[in-house]
Length: 405
Image 1 (cartoon, rainbow, N blue to C red):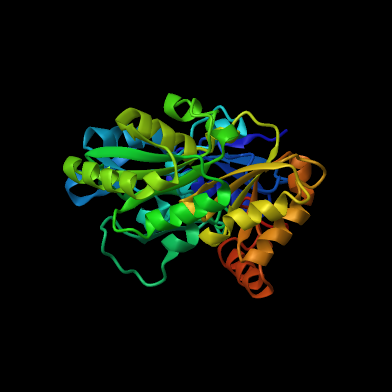
Image 2 (cartoon, rainbow, N blue to C red; image 1 turned 90 degrees about the vertical axis):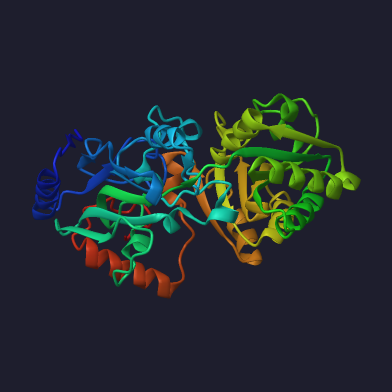
């Protein structure tokens, strides 16, 4: 039986990992548990439950810095920021509904997995917003990196290293992040009736314009119909969505310019305030594919290549897809089969210069199919050396990313 270890203090966390190291007892790290179905299935003896490391420790709105326990729910963080009209600019996703999890996402989980939402094209990735952290390595050594100020230089940038390591190097228990002022107004310009190729061109034109687009997505008609936003669901057509944020008069002027710019390409609609926010939550959390039994791929590639990727994949696989990040991020659902279409997907991605992650599939499929993009030999060797440095006995989330890491 997998009994959970639940440390409540930093000393107890160190002792738990010391015990694991001494007996080579592999551990699964969890905060809220919303992402347990992400990555390769692991063969572990115990769960290291970090949920006690929660709560906002320091919040200085004037300095744009917040420090919290790594297991603090994102909902709690966002509620506190809302009161001060601030936000997490990297717009972290909550995949709980997508993966059928009951728990909500945590701040540490979003950072450990480097999850960034639609505003990634403007604000950068999650790793760009982590200022500092406290953690315990797989050597059972407590350590920290970075700080609680926006401008700090501390030698090796361990913040960048730990963000996206999926808990394989250290157990985060406290993080400090940069926050940003929330926009006064948010609107979304919708352009209807474009096919995938025309949508990619339009998204490129929008983000290269001077109008400071902070979200750029494309939904085919069938996926648009699943939206909770009536203007989107009832349109009966594919659409591109362009988000504009900022002070009121600027938002109105930029939206008007975008409407005029795209009027020759299709029918135009505009989402205001609540509808706009609801729509981008759906894009962020991959809501069009929630409650779906199909395997789901998260594909990053050059924005102009999205339509070609979908066309190539459909030569061999029945699939549905939508684009985020102006085409640079493709969410692709395929019939699960024995390998979730891995051969066809990865072949198409390799030809276009991207990488693919199998975000959702059964544990049987995730055992035999590489979940993350297989790294080049030099990158694999570097990853192995990092694992050896931080976790030499391999007790932290062993095999979650790659079989031998």
